[in-house]
Image 1 (tube, one colour):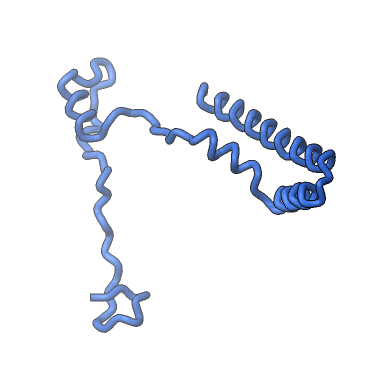
Image 2 (cartoon, rainbow, N blue to C red):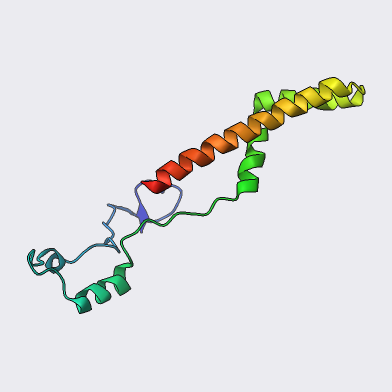
Length: 122
């Protein structure tokens, strides 16, 4: 059977059937005694099934993040200007442009790292 939006397939269209939520919590889990809480065996059983109550975060590649500060339309123009300055052997302009690009990347990377550290401390 095909869904209503799959007009290119042959067969009859049917209404979408709801999918059971794989992470649904049984109703009896919500009837925990407030004064005594869960037993240790209940806690272990639920941790095995659902995992710990924590947010997982991905590790960021700091080098990849730093190189990301050299991408963008304005930065591409500056990089092109640096290549032209090097091609014309105008080393002062080349050094100034490269210095500006590096300073921009260092400041941006540092600010983003500080912001990530503040968020992680919350």
